[in-house]
Image (tube, rainbow, N blue to C red):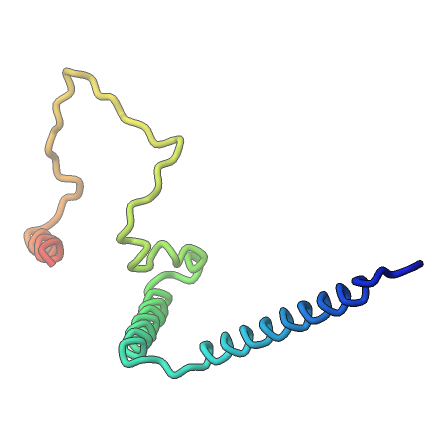
Amino acid sequence: MSVGKNGGQDRQSQDSKNKKRKREKRKKKQRERKEEFRKPTVEEEIEIARVIEEKEKDLIEISMVEEMVLRWFHKYLKVFEKKESERVPTRKTWDHIIDLRKSFVLKKEKIYLLSRIEREEVQEFVKD
């Protein structure tokens, strides 16, 4: 197997290109590491503190919910969380309109018989 006149030079230039690429990769990794460990700015520190505070509130809220919800419903705790309760559930294939007859008239009736005191308590609760 013979190598031409330029064969040795081509191999050397290829080796030097490979070495150069490796050096560039190393330098790039070093720069990335420096960026990873740089000191956060004041704005970033404020944002980090806000996120931590929000997460702590969520943890406190979760522990409160765990205390209020019966143990056998703990597998459904996510439903009782504030964020989950504020969003509208996604539409499902079984969601449908209930068509009423044209002659239907809605009757306003009391669902539960309550005493005057109980009614006042319910009305006050609904206002809150």
